[in-house]
Length: 192
Image 1: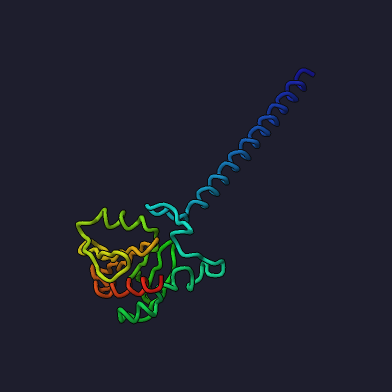
Image 2: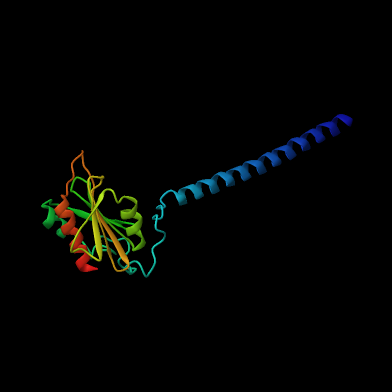
């Protein structure tokens, strides 16, 4: 009888240990799933601009229909057709990422970016790099072009808006010239 009690106690201990082990496995599985969910949720987040978040006062309004389409928030200020006409580069497409309108060749190369930001960005960008910037006339309230610092860029202030138009080097070459950058910036300025 004593042996039977010992065996019964032994079996009960094993069952208790199995239940505890099962609880630990479930808890560990939940921790792993939650950790993966947190990392996958953070994976595609954009870093906020240095000048802080966009505000209604500093940025054009976006309608729900425009969000996420090629004809969205910023494409009314500069179109692929505008860039093609000024640069002579055909087959361009555009896409918006956060506060930047990007133009791509038919090979998928990013050749031009237009950043739409609040007015405080002008002093942050031009002030921080003033040794590279030269004034540009007849563009916005004030404007400057950054050469020879790469990428070449025109930054201008117009009312509550600061716009930076820059060309992206491809294999050491700039697909958009200085004069073309200024011409494109003037198109954006005329549509603000």
